[in-house]
Image 1 (cartoon, rainbow over the protein chains, first blue to last red):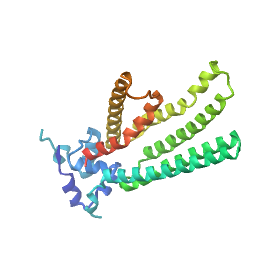
Image 2: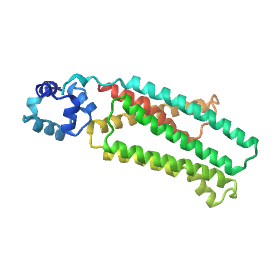
Image 3: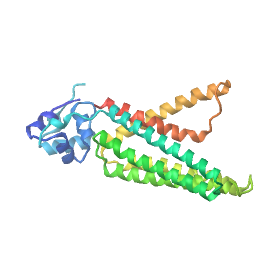
Image 4: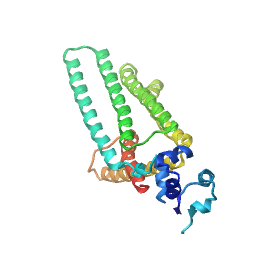
Length: 64
Length: 208
């Protein structure tokens, strides 16, 4: 699944560790989600969306 | 704040470093243990001294394991979660109890008559802390709040289980045809644990 996480993070000048801290997950988790290797669960996707003040589909794009 | 720290550490290199350190440290500890036990035998220091040597060796190995866990996590640039820290602490306690139970059972075995009910209990005694260690792993998966870590660890456990089942199947048939010696089934757990380290590397590589 493609996502805009890296761009959104860069706009705020956050490192992966910064985002991980805000989401209460590990930096490895942020990296895996960002690179599209791991798809977050619905609760985590909602948490990410809330953090950036956007809807889930604005951040994640279903390319399947 | 910047995004320059986005490149994750190589898990394969970190694991190789940790395994190399483990082999060196455990090899040195085993050589020292073997020498010390030989010396204790030579001077006829008695069973108490032998037990003390075995217990000391167990403590040293556990110390090495705890140290390696920290080194490995640092090399992988991982910050252990609260659940992971609890897991490590509980696992080490279980391993400590295992060393005590095993040493105690071996010593008590010399005193008890064979075949009695107590003998059965004694034989099962070292298995109990290992069963606790298995439960501790399950507890970690339940308590880990980071879903990616949980998924990654569960995947590693499945890889390790697959590896162990494959090995046990191949070994079993080799044994059936008389080509390899018999291996006792308690080996399954340490063998699974040995599979777990490369399984974690495989699982993590998939998500890099």
